Image (cartoon, rainbow, N blue to C red):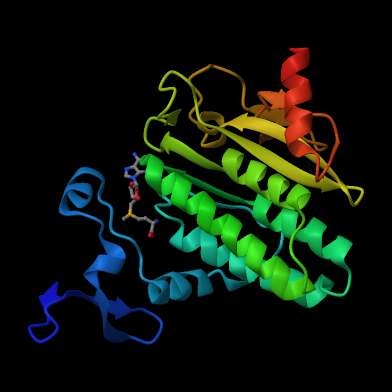
Length: 250
Ligand SMILES: C[S@@+](CC[C@H](N)C(=O)[O-])C[C@H]1O[C@@H](n2cnc3c(N)ncnc32)[C@H](O)[C@@H]1O
């Protein structure tokens, strides 16, 4: 870190890995407080570094349904950029058909996951992603996103961006409960299938002693976590209602 005497504001000296050049970035853009750095290692990544790193997996960032998980997502520097890139693809392919745009935009947001240990980061990340969803929708379709569609995107973000501890694999708000992620898969156009998985099983370190192997067509053992919950096929705008119905019936 260096001080800029004239401006009186501290700057971070960073290295741009794609252009192999040093550049300066305001400390206030990357650090909230010394305490948060000491307690949680919280230093946000500069957009230039985010883009350079995402360019290393550019093809995947531009595949609408490819799944991304950031286990220490902060305010979502990486996740927000992945969403922007995916929504650019959705716009280029489907802007002429609002219905198609909407379905694929929901699929794009549903494929992005994050965990952070700090509650305000989780809220900021969810808000930033929702705001990108809303503004990209308007830019692509030249109309405001309907409340129904926004509610669906908001519901998905509440499930996908989790207030949790990526080391213990538990939630922070309910430390006895495991982090659970929902897999959202598009089926027959407008419908979505939701299956919930415990994160500990997904990282193959199950503490529940459940078998993680199924047998494939060739009779070989393949690693396959089992869902902890399944939901009926649901219209992409009715995902929150489907959860309420399943919980009421339980
Ligand atoms: C170096 S920052 C990176 C944030 C973000 N990935 C970025 O690049 O801007 C590390 C983040 O990890 C979070 N964190 C620290 N310990 C964690 C843990 N055990 N589980 C989940 N998140 C954690 C912090 O709150 C902080 O937001």
